[in-house]
Image (tube, rainbow, N blue to C red; front, side, top):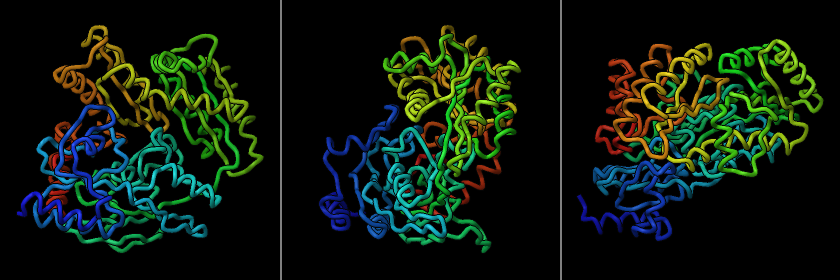
Length: 468
């Protein structure tokens, strides 16, 4: 193994002076996660400017058996992009890979490098009269490489699918430094294993995604947003079925918001206007979109919501009459995570269930947690249209202990197992759920995952300590 100074010099020769950060103060922003739950240490931060530079960096680390931790926008929520405390790893930031390599309007595809911000990709698609539907609250700072590595979800999964469903091909640097060019914009390619799917959602443990072919869609020309008040999650699921049956694929988003979430947003963002005159226990944010200018979405949704109110399925409803009003309703939903962060640390669960089991889960799990944790408060919101809840336990005026977190997890995850759910819907495993995953996947599933890891990364240098 090379001496530390010699190794750093060899990295600098690959990425240049502007591509290497070694000072403790300069490295600090890369070594702490967004939630403040994880911090680590690294030999240095390297910021390659091309796929070839990424490959050279990984090849050198492989030769020296030095761990590599890939990082995008550092907006992850499970500690997957934070190195451990040993200081042995090289953190590879992909933020300088910012090129949109091409846009193929006829094929409805776009090739973006891993460091492109999600918002930049959305804007590029829009400039070409196309639409890229992945949408997250962090889209102004998260990168597409990070989105792919965690198989991000977001608000439009109901209509367009997860990130995995929006990718046709990828380019990736393997753990030995070879570059696999799988940038094929094909919707049909039945030539053996679909290798790209190994890397999407793998959190950088099998290699580093450096570019991707992304699916584009026709640009929506009209949209409609409403907030409906409901008595409970069961009514929300009923309303979801009513809207989907009436309006089909025009339904783009269906977001559940509990009273507690709304109260937190109003508290920490005082400019937020309470939407209803009378407070309600639960709300759902509904969005429709269509490629037709004259789709009459407001009229269609208004009719469905009137039916829901008359049937007692909805308690009240507000239909946005302008783009500004629609934006104000969406800001309530998008500010929930930030309001939670301002309130303090909580025991967080990013879970998924069959939509048909959401109501049963909330009805059974909330009282179980409130019984086990005196004065604890459950904060529940999420993408109920695709079965994904953010289901968090807040303790009064203090951060939870590790023992309390483990106890809460046992209650939540046991019920998830019973109801056919998953302990991670869109945030990934990272460090946060690395120990939990072995309790909720079968021995055979874990054996297959370890076999894939061993085959591609036999020396375990790619993001060690994450997922497995």
